[in-house]
Length: 343
Image (cartoon, rainbow, N blue to C red):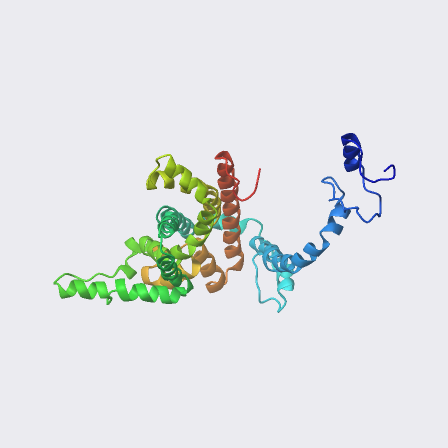
């Protein structure tokens, strides 16, 4: 028994278990890389993942970051007709410094577009943002899977409609010759044309956005609700919590990180309130009520060929949007949430 490989005491067994495996032996296992390893070793370890993400990174650089260099025309009196080559046109266009930005500060049309943009953002934040949350809670409370699936399909469907079709549907309902006006005239009342009323335009745009995209917005919240453990609901029910108590103390805390993230992103997108949607209805109500920053940039840059001035307006919008994202993310950190990025 002296040559047996079985340890004779507990001390020998513990020593054998703690003994490092021989290098190159059959029982040796590859140890995970240390946390503080060099950049070269980490690149070698993750080379397959890096190669997989390389095409996506190149596309982002090509279509999102390279065009940022074109903002230089905001400091020029840019003339694209100098050459067929856009780079040559930029290099040969005269510099005007901050003249375009000075024109923006003195342009009442620009400030009117800013005001309309902010009003639409506040309305959509107050009236539109909570609706996907409420719809997600409502669908999540449905017991029958078939009813839930049909409800989701009906709510998702308008998202796939183009804005041309959405506005055509609203025109057929709320236009001067729409169903609502015809019904009022049939009962002896005056008809109404909400589609061409500047006073109600901001509410009309918000209603169109809710009808088109609210159903699609509940996808994220339903995914967050699906990750909530049923044990939490059962424990709350055993403690005597009713349906509303369970929603307040279990469901909403589970949605809080997602709500904070989407709210930060929504604030960062505050100055973009739907270019195509508003452009299609701009002529019907006039620029006084429908002009927003995106349509202002398009009208001056594409229609009026004032490219430098339009680029300056777009650059101002981008800087303000970045500031709003950073501010909203800071508020999310103060509330204990992660936001777009960690501290």
